[in-house]
Structure formats: C-alpha cells, structure tokens
Image (spheres, rainbow, N blue to C red):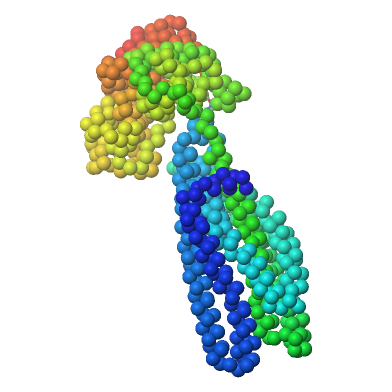
Length: 589
Ligand code: CTP
Ligand code: MG
C-alpha cells in the first residue's frame, strides 16, 4: 500500500479528471436508486388502479432518469479513461526514465525480462486499479448504502433479510480473497520468467538456431508458459466460486423476500410493488458489496505491482554526481590508476582487480594484454565510472573521476565496448549517436579513420543504409568498425577500444591503427587498447600485462620481451620464437 501511495503522484496532472469521474458516477448512482422506486409506483399506483396515464407518465420519467444516469455513466467512463491512461503513460515514462539513470551495477541486478514485465504488465495492473478505483470506489459504496436505506424505507418489515445476508457475503468474499491474493504474487513472478525466456530467445535466436537448440528452447518456453497458465488456472479456480456463491445467496434472499413479503401481501399489509422494489434494492446492495470486495482484491493486486515498480524506482544509482562535481573540465588526458582495487560485489566480494597502479600520459597508447577473464574490461570500465572503485582512485589530470560530472566525463571519453551494440536506424545516425549534431564531413572522417567508409559507400544506400535491430545486416567486423567510428566521432580526450578489432582482419586493423596514430598526434589523445593479438600492441607506449586482476608486468614491447616471462610466452605462442626483433615483423608499418 505504501508503494501505491508513493506512485500516486503520477495521477496529479490528471486531478481534474480524477475528480470529475466520481462526480459523474454520483449522477448515475442517484438515477439508479430512483428506478426501483418508480417501478413500485407504477405497480402499486398505476397498474393496481388501472390508471394507464399514470403508468405511461411514470415509465416516461423512468426513461428520462435512465438517460440522465447514462450520461453520467458515459461521462464517468471517459474521465476515468483519461485519468487512468494518462497515469499509466506517465508511470511508464517515469519508469523508463529511471531505468536510463541506473548504473551498470543496478542493471546487473535486473534481468531484462523483469524490466519488461514491470514496464508493461505491472504498469497496466496499476492503471486498471486506478480506473477501477475511480469508477467503483464511489459507485459501489454509495449504491450499497443507498440501496440498503431505500430497501429499509420501502419495506421495514423485511429489513432483517439484507442484514442477515451481508455477513454471509462478506465471509464468502473474505474466503475467496484470502486464497486468491497470495496466488497473484506468484503470477507476476512466473510472468517474469516467461518474459526472460522470451527476451533471451528473441535476442539470441541465431545462436539457438546455430546450436540446433530450437527444440530445447521451445520446451523451456513451453515450461514457463505452462507454469504461468497453471498459476492463472489456480487463481481462476478460486475466483470462479464468486459468482455462483453470490447468485445462491441472492436467490436465498429473493426467496426470503417472496416468502415473508408474499405472506404479508396476502394478508393485505404489503403491496406487490413494495416487494418488487425491495427485491431490486436487495440485489443492488449485495452486488455492490461484491464490487467493493473485488475492488479491494484488485487494489491489493496493484499493490504487489506497485511494489515491483517501486523496487526499480527506488534503486539509487550507486554511481552519482557529487553536488560539488566539476562541470567545467577540459583535461589533457593524463589517466592514472592509484592502488586501485575493485570488486563487483562491493567490499564483501572477491576483488576482480588488485592494487592496480599505472599512468597513461596524454598522447600515449596503453595496451592491455591478458588472458580472458583477467580483468581487462573491468579495468577500463572504471575510467568512465561505469563502476566505482572499491579502493584507491582513478584520476584524469589529477582529478578523481568521482569528482567530475558524469556527462562532462563521458563527453571526454570515447569507448567502443567489447560487445558491439548498434541501434536500428541509419548507419549515419549510429555513427553520430554520441554527437547527433555532427556534420556529414565529421561522420565521414570518423568512418574513414575506422576503415568503415569504403564498405559503407559500397552499400546501395551508403550512410543512409537502415540497420536492422542490433545491426544484424552487417558482419561482425563491420559492426565493430561502426562502433569505433562512433567512439572517434566525439573526438574524445581518452579513447578506449575494448577488443574492438577482434573481428577485423589484420590488414584492416593495421590501417585502423595507422589512422588512430594520425588522429592521436593531432589531438594528443590518450588511447587504451585491449587486444588479444600481440601484433596489435607491438607499438604501444606502454603494455600492461594483466594476470588474475593484477599487473604482472608493464613496459614497452622490447623491455617486456626481456623482463616478463609471461609476455614472452604470449609472444612466442602467437608470433613464434626466434622472432624477437621488435616492430614490424608482419610486414606492416
Ligand atoms: N565479472 C563479474 N561481473 C561482471 C563482469 C565481469 O563478476 N559484470 C567478472 C568475470 O567473471 C571475470 C572478471 O570479472 O572473472 C573479469 O572480467 P573482465 O574484466 O570482463 O575480463 P576480461 O579480461 O575483459 O576478459 P575478456 O578477455 O574475456 O574480455
Ligand atoms: Mg573483456
């Protein structure tokens, strides 16, 4: 419930609709309440007295009242729709905005499937609860109490019947809700699982095909699907009792009215019209009571959804700007790691990086080499503050990265992530993703440096070629080169290429490197290159050999060949022994 209150402010812009809806409903309820009264009058005063004029007049009046009620009802529906849909849209947008602010560490905590469920199904649950509240919150209690009063006024002798039935209905509804409610939480969890399987499969459908796992994946999806269905059936089995139970109780009530009322009518102390009106009021009372109960159930369901949404809304990005963060910062690009320790689970976990200390001077190229899982990507992710260090500090021009405004920091760092992600849309827009205002010349220059210009212009639509989702109509190396161009375009002070040429042939890689060196000399760019191929790092100003989260050795190629056995091993395994001459043995440069 608290979560609902916290999210209630999303309804604020729609307060006018949210007030008008119950008011319009009030009109409908009042009109509804007059109907049994009118019926009674027609029967007792008109039909009994064979007064046709009176019957027609009253019937006409009934229709007029019904019309007024209908207008109120329609108004209520429209206002409710405006308020609840607006609320839902804003909540969805707010949630989406929140997801955008989450840090890498926050995002590690949510499956994409979970986020999808929250953005869609959970928001819909809340939106429907708001709609139900606006429509029923006023209607049902008013109608219930109004009908009860009218029933008593109509035939006080029969008043004991509703009072006997109300506790029975309440007991029945309580029985249903207390059984159904716990089942609903599980529905959302199973929906999460289903969405996770679905999302993984849609994203990874090519891998599924490649490994002929379609059968297994269909099974996995089927299992999640059946799980969800079973749970929904379980809920339905409980809630299915509702209407039959109501009908039985209601008919018991009607039978009671007819029995006691009939006797009194025969004795001449009661009119037929009174009995008809009383039956109507009784039915309205009990149905309204049921509606109130169902509303309680729906709101408590929405509370579960609200909690799940709040969990996302509430997660504070652990990487945040300090109030004093530097907003003006034009660094030269001296990146220093000072005794940096880092663990993905904060201080508790095993450190992935241990006591890393090195300096990258402006204009230098620092290469990171090391076996898979050694911590290379983790290391460079600390520079743009994707994660914060656990110990020590990372500085740019002597300023701790935690003291720099993130937008400013990111504007100075161009990064091509290890896993290339492109967006659907034109190639041009993908390249200028970090700087949408870039001119065509700038886009082309970046593409040329990344050795992407030729293959782009070779495509029928050139830079306007539309990429499918995740850039599927490009080769792996082509995607990588667009990602490099994207990083180059923002003309960063610090450029980070995380294994960005792994899918590019050696010759193209050499050309990219040459272009980088050229750009570097213009701007004194500091470049970090992570590479598997030793040929990529031969000319680096500094090579860091990362072993098990530590710097096992650092220096230039020639120094490391002498001083570091690990480096020599890597070198020998890739380029063969007896070839320790230094630069250029691939025939390039
Ligand atoms: N790791 C983790 N949580 C992440 C990313 C990585 O716990 N979100 C762990 C990995 O399990 C690994 C270690 O951190 O043991 C280092 O990972 P990483 O820095 O990505 O290694 P790389 O050296 O970049 O490995 P590769 O060459 O395969 O990219
Ligand atoms: Mg990596």
